[in-house]
Length: 79
Image 1: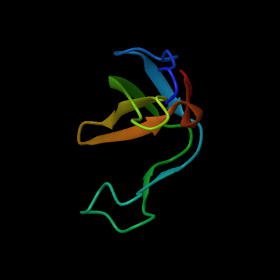
Image 2 (image 1 turned 60 degrees about the vertical axis):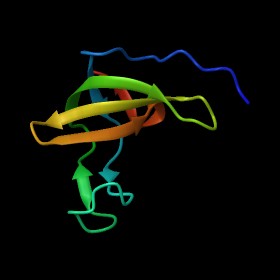
Image 3 (image 1 turned 30 degrees about the horizontal axis):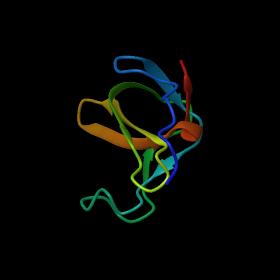
Image 4 (image 1 turned 120 degrees about the vertical axis):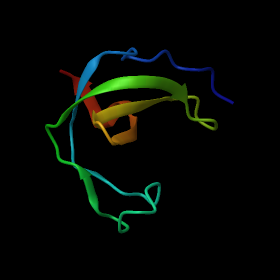
């Protein structure tokens, strides 16, 4: 098991999607592979956790009032 990596982004921080974010099956009310967030969209980190196996940070990012998406660090940049 890997030691936990410290997150780059913190709660409340504005971040930008670096690539299109598509449905990986986490959103059952959207078709598989449907576009959830377009590259360049700005959101706010609302929670930070860690991926269980790799201990890498996972961010819950609110991109709109009704859309909170789990993102890896490589999918985000500081806004």
